[in-house]
Image (tube, rainbow, N blue to C red):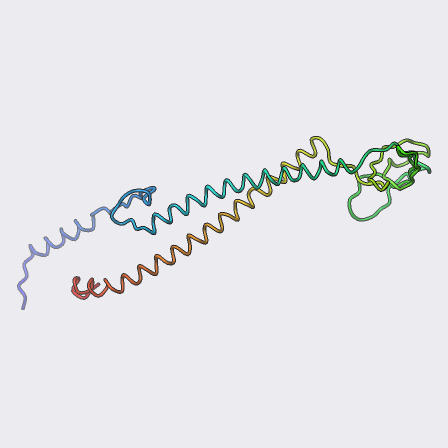
Length: 218
């Protein structure tokens, strides 16, 4: 039979209250801890930090370079197209229809009509082009033709060409940067898995010793 005294009960209650009132420990995250010297930092942590830094730097640089290259390529394409076509003053041979034909696809409100023009060599050409609805025969229109003497769509020039080139670069830049980021993230993921495997192996060696030191409760 154990001896019991009320003072022990009161003391135990006070200790329980004191323990209950103990504020929880606040863990403050340390920024850039992989770049600071500390006993818990491993070589793999430093490698991971460099991988993250290199990934972001390369993602930004590659995105910018790819965007500028795409914009320049689009501008060069527009310039090449402008060099392959030229404007001609043509005449509508028949009265144009007054209303556009209902159809599918893009409709700019104009109608197709037969036009005729004479090139710089004096050769007469005839083709169909988009004109204003209801335009009478004999009306003059400007058409764009290629080197084969066929009517083609007008080239992109001026502000429209600049905007399209800029939009092309703006679309390509984040895609290129994201591709680099995905590669860097994959490398980092493999490094993390490798570190976790190393921790498992180390714990297999330290675990039994830890259990002995804690009286078998570890």
